[in-house]
Length: 127
Image 1 (cartoon, rainbow, N blue to C red):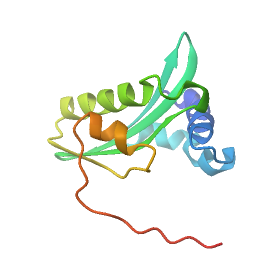
Image 2 (tube, rainbow, N blue to C red; image 1 turned 90 degrees about the horizontal axis):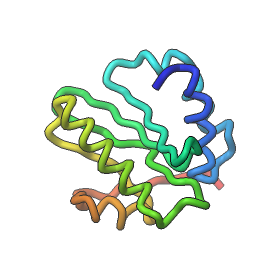
Image 3 (cartoon, rainbow, N blue to C red; image 1 turned 60 degrees about the vertical axis):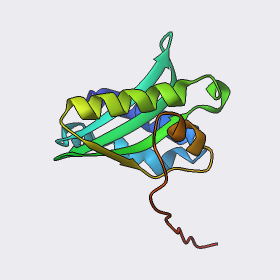
């Protein structure tokens, strides 16, 4: 993704996760556009952002991150389409194994494209 589009990516992923825009502004740094093996994806319909994704390919591993769909566009297959594209592109880049950590909302989407639960992660947050 060109560095001039990173702000749009950061705003869209924040909206997709219903988080303050400041939470994802770190991605607005142009140095992110230069990271080797990291690719940002912005899904659009008729020029309007509907979702996001990000991959990191390291050797034969594909990490999938920040898959989000804007609330108004959910349950239309965009999250699934983004996930399929991330996997396709990662495998085209040489990855043979893909991993991600899912929210409860995302589990059915990822299961529908062949992901399964291998482990559980405990997240502890401050009140």
